[in-house]
Length: 166
Image 1 (cartoon, helix red, strand yellow):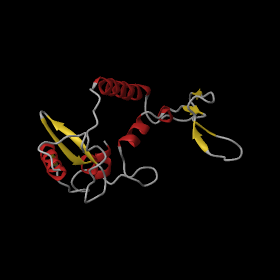
Image 2: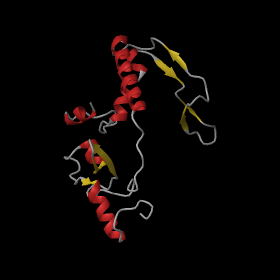
Image 3: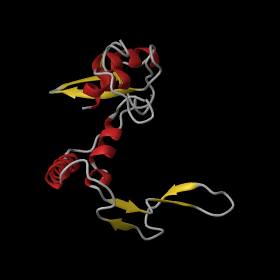
C-alpha cells in the first residue's frame, strides 16, 4: 500500500513518504469510525512539559460518536481481522538468528545497513533501502553469503570463515 501511494505521488499528513508503520497507524486509528480514544498521551510533569505516550500510567477513555465516521464498522473490523492474522503469522515464524555480519555491512550508495535474506537454501545480503524502497532509490549489489564468508576468511587469513575469530 505504501509503495502504491508513493508511486501515485500521494504524500502523508506532513508531506512525507508513506511507510509500513504509517499505514498501520491509519488502519488501526479509531478516529476513522467517528470515535476517540482519550489520553493517548500526557505531559510527563510540570517542569519538563514533555509529551509522552500513555503506556498505562493514566486511565484512557473511549468516546463513541464524537465526530462523523469516515468508514463503516464492517470495513474497520475486516482490517482489524487482517492485522490479527498477520500478527499471528509473524509470531509463528521462526525468530531470526543474528549473524556475525549483522550491523557491520553498510551500503556504499545510501549508507544503510545490509540485511540477510533467504530464498530457499540460498542466503544473501541486501541493502535495507533497496529492500524497502526498491532499485529506484538505491541501486546496490546483492552479496551472496558464501562469497561474503570466503572474502572474510581470506582477509582474516583463515582457511574457513570462523564467526568467533571475526
